[in-house]
Image 1 (spheres, rainbow, N blue to C red):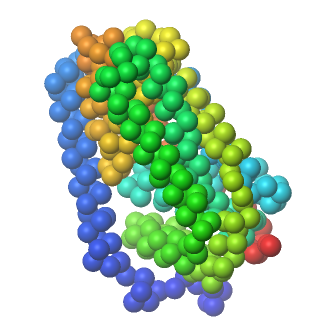
Image 2: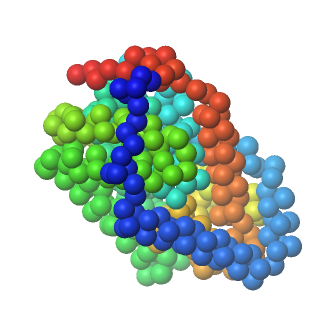
Length: 363
């Protein structure tokens, strides 16, 4: 980069007090979540949990395949939203941006929003910064609606297994309603109001936080400020995407892959695998993820959910196996995320643009 294109370094780049408070808060929640995991494992018996995890080791490649298929549907959803412009993006760029997004989503407290910022930064040279950011925004709503749709068969499975009046059934129903409302607000709100400037500010705050840990944050801030000059283009890109029905369908398919993945995990820890039990296991995951939304990667919350609802999986007398369901998934997530970020660190794009492309703002 030339001197004129160096990322900015000024007073505004320093994190505000509120940014620091939120950052500390998320790290504190992460520490508490780790403590909860330790407590749950101790209560279930470390030896029993360890033996369950070791026995499940042979299934890890299949669990990892399910995870890859699940996160791959995000790419499918985004390609559907971008339409013809998606063809401008080389396959290697889709792969690298997906790996970067997943790694940040799993391993950093910034979560999914931070991962989507990184993905948008990788795609921007090919589809334009405004449209890449718009795709990231809409993908949030699409993902929520995928969550809503999978909640329906999950609720049916729980109702058949434990009764429609069970606590888990009510929580799954609540999760479906909450994600439907949130997804609708995101999708409709983005099209009915000018959110370009607002979203640019939010993305800039995340990048400013990330800059304290990795040079990627500084680069993202540089690109986000360039996007900020195109707020009107951002709003127009949101409107041009129309109703994302096919992307929502792709997100639902991704959740079905995740349900199959949880079925494999249930089998791996010694549970009984049926279509119904796979959906019940997915239902517990959805509830844990929803209740632990503020905790990075829902550490401790998901494990606790499987402990509380172990009876719904027939594991009331085998809580170590119930807790191990979340732990097996976490082992696979951390392994894939670590490999993804390590690969991206060695896979350096050309300075002119991702993988040698010239940075442009196509219309």
